[in-house]
Length: 263
Image 1 (cartoon, one colour):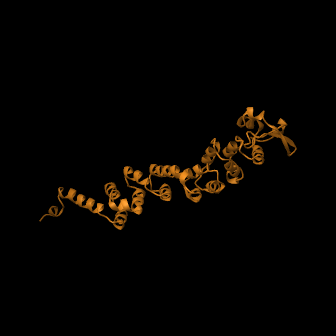
Image 2 (spheres, one colour; image 1 turned 135 degrees about the horizontal axis):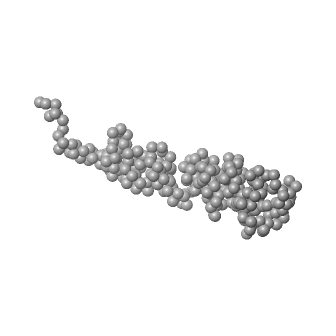
């Protein structure tokens, strides 16, 4: 008998695939998890596993499917809606997961933020992606904002964007202006100086980093006319007036006081 006769015919190959697919559908949780770890598993087999009773009943199988680098997107994204918040966080932080799947997982977390408990928000603030941490900066709760600012994945751009939001809480400005990690960064300083929500003492310190001309650019002139004398600091008379009881703005009454400050 020739060696060729030992090889399965082309008509037998589809039959083998069918048997494998049926075996996949009949898999238990342990079988499915083992199959997902097989090096040669393909997208079609992963899709079959995702439709199996094991995947429908087991969160472990569903999570393993989404985390698999060869999982089809049309299978992974619907599975995200079934996951718990911290499973979604795991997906968003796994390097092997495609960027669009990670973002979809973050979207699911962000949608749920309003309904999460304070403890869950605090845990996310510490451990989640920078994008999720940035969303949590809008919570008017120091217990949430503080760990979010300490999140190593949070970027300067995200902090600046958070400060520029109209509804950004005053707590955020107080915590950012008091943290050297952020308050020493130029773009963050500018965002703080532009807001009335920044505490006056911190704003005065930040103003020393810029020239009078530059301060006039970032603090609208129409606001300067509303200030009233309040306090003398370092020999200069400053002007301040609360607006609608919210925060502070500042400018020296003696305009020459700014001369000599470096931009």
